Amino acid sequence: MHTYFVNYSPLVFLDGRRHLGMQNISDSYGPHLLSEAEDGCDKHLMKLVDALSIKVVVALGRYAEKRATTFADKQCD
Image (tube, rainbow, N blue to C red; front, side, top):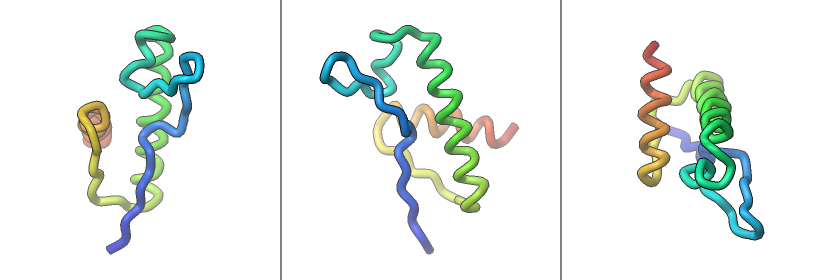
């Protein structure tokens, strides 16, 4: 069995010098950007899962768990 680690968001958002996690983007940049970023990150993750035939996705943290659940729901559609 092989393991592949990937960050949900390959994007970096800054507030001054402080890094903003995806869960904080809406506060600083607005909900529209958060929605677009999540959509792009979900699509990126779906492509990786398909390309690498991934069977298990492990999410670290509440935000990642929420996105992984949303991602799994999209995969089942």
